[in-house]
Image (cartoon, rainbow, N blue to C red; front, side, top):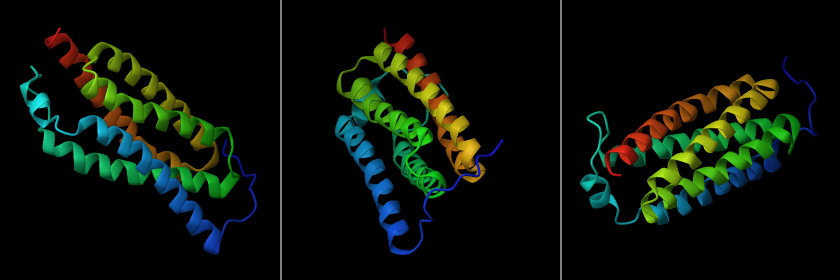
Length: 164
């Protein structure tokens, strides 16, 4: 069942400032992750990896697109119901997203990073369910992200097993 309650209408300048705010939040999460991967191209290349592991150059473009989808999805929900439980879930998954990269690359804690990405995967799932109740469009925007994190979790697990 889709929630039809609507917060104060968000149009005009206020809506665009809010979109910029969601983009800024996602940028901060990406920047934290980016700090954790500076100079790690060689580290990633030197890890034992499964045959299906993507090349390191692919991660930047994929994450750029996914972060844009995450920001727009959050903004769409905010426009519909304001800062609600759905956006608390969105915030939680974004914080977990920011933590994973420094754990995996910065600290080299592949097992801990795997446990953390499982929590992130679950948080994204909760966010998807809550977003579906507010906006099917916002929910759909998160599905590629959830799919990529599913793939990333499998890759994380495989790299942990191969490099332990």
